[in-house]
Image (cartoon, rainbow, N blue to C red):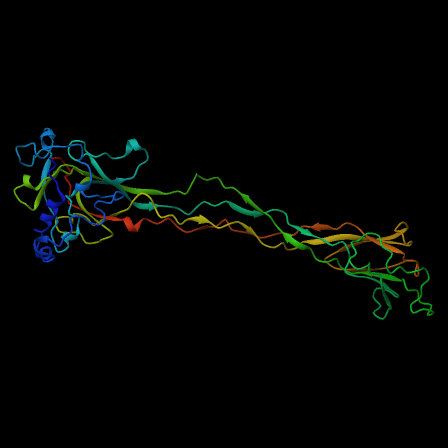
Length: 402
C-alpha cells in the first residue's frame, strides 16, 4: 500500500511550530486538501487524488523503493529531508516535497527532461518561465487606385457681350435644361447677330465663360493588403522550463518525524515545496535559492494587428469637354473646350455675334487621387497566466552523488 498520504502530510505540518498549532487544536481546522487538490484540471492534485506512480503495494517496490532497506530510508538512492518550518509553513502544500528539475527549455520531445524511473517516475507538472513573446507580425497596408463619380456638365455656361476681362460686359446664360446629363441640347440657343442689349449694336456672343465641373463624388479607395512572410501563428517561447516529479515517500523511514524519506536530488534536480500564487519568502529549510515563479505553458494572448483602412481620396479631379455648335442639332461644331473640376475658363469667340445653337458635354473621366493607408500595426502582448502561477522553494542539490 502507498505510504504517502495527505493526512500524513498535514499531521507533519502540525509539528512545524506554534503558529501552525494556533490555527486549530490538533490542526482540526486545517482542510485536508487545497482548492486545487482534487480539481481534475489542476496542475498539482493531491497525492490521494491521483494514481500511484506505477507502484500498487510496498511489496512490489523491488530494491529501489524507499521501503526496500528493511524499513529504513535507503542511503544509496534516498535521503531524509526536513519538511518546511516557520510561521508560514502551513501555507505551503501539505503533500510531500517534489523532485524538480529546472533548466533551459529546448525544442523536441526527445530533448525534454524525464522523471527518474527508479525513484520518482510520475510527472506532476511541467511549468515554464521567462516568456519570449514578440509583437505580432502584421501585413503591410496600402490602398488601391481611388475611384469616384464625375458629372460632365459644367456648373455654368455664360455668354458674354464683351471680352473675358471686362467686368461690365452684359451676360446671358447658356446653361442646359434642369437635370442636363450632357447630351445634345439647344436650350438657351442664341441666333446669329443677336445684340445685347437689343438695338445697341453690341454683339451678344463675344466670349464664353465655362464654370468648373462639380468636384468628384463618392470617392473611395479599396484596401490593398500586402502579406508579409511570417511563421504560422504568433511566436510564443519559454526560455526556462521545470519538471516536477513524484515518487514513493514516507516519514516513518526517518528517525525524525519532521523529516521525510525522498529521492536524492543530484544537480540540476532539487527537492522543492510549492505553493499556488506568487510569493517571495520561502519557508525555512527551503531557502537554498530565491523563490522561483513558474507558469503554465498556455499564455493569455492579447496580441494582434490593427485592421487595414484607407482614408478619403485627396488630389483627384474630374475632366470632361464642352462642344459648341452653330446649329441646333449638334452637327456644325465650331469650338471644343476642356472642362475640369479644378476651375473654370473663359475664351473669346470669333467671329463675334455668330450663332450659338446647341451644346454637348463629353463623357467625364476621373483623374484618381490618393488615399492614405492606416492599420497593420501590432498591438497588445502575451501575458503569463498569473491565475495559475506556482512558486517553488527548494533545498540545495548535490553536485556529486554521495
